[in-house]
Amino acid sequence: MDAKDAEKIRELLNFSGYPFQHYSADRIAKLDGFQLAVEVPFTHPPSNAAFLGTHGSIDILAACPNTDDDTLVWFVIECKKANDKIKNWILLPNKQQDPRWPTFSGSIEKEGEPLQLSFGRDDRFPNLGYHRGTDFDYCVSGIEVNTDLRGTNHDTREKIYNPLKQVTHALRGLEVQYPKIIEGIEYPRQRTYIRNKYLPVVLTTANLFVADFPVGDVVQGEIPADKLSLDGPKKWATYEFALPDFLSYTFPRSGGTVRVSKQTVFIVNAQSIDEFFTAATHIEDGRAAGNQ
Image (cartoon, rainbow, N blue to C red):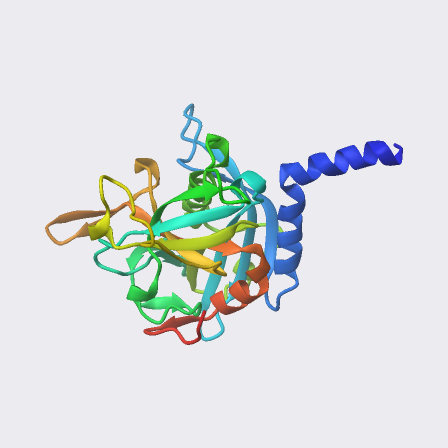
């Protein structure tokens, strides 16, 4: 293949987003304590006899021990390279969020006992600058804006929703996998880690902004001039993804059951890969230390 043909292939590969996926995996693998696998398959709901479950694969699955106890922190990662048409992600927080607590999933694995899955709101936060539950961003919607800030994305294939759904779908399939035997990740074989903590992450080259405006001043559905402020570009933000019914969780409670239909997802800018993943392995009780 001559140089001109190689250049054509290079452009096509860059457009595909695969180089960003492999770059991200390489960066994470070089961090202290991390083990990972790329293109990890999952199935959820699972296959049952003649009924075939829904299959897929996640870009990166990484694991690293928590620094303080017997918890193994799992990162379920979907990579999204942002082209010029979607270079800026403008995220909108839910000001009506109540209670203001992030929602994470985890599990307890004890040899000879069934897997115990937990899902809900607690005060064990990754050390990412969120000191209390009220500090999380609680974004629930957003738009993709082009590089010169003059146009929004209308291509449904490039919506923020897609990587968010993929990463939560993968997490749902992988968290119930027991035992967790995944090539490239040896920690589960050691039987040292009883608890698992699962953090869904969307890695992107897009610039991240969280929009804020006084909702009481909205006139006929529009924000008045000079009433919008943008926090960013941010290193990362949290998104409360609304789970489809087949991904939601139902748990028994006194007097009935409770359905958990949202999950906290971290959206991380690619320039902060090292900082984010290093800090996120510190799962602490109560208020997390550190500042974003």
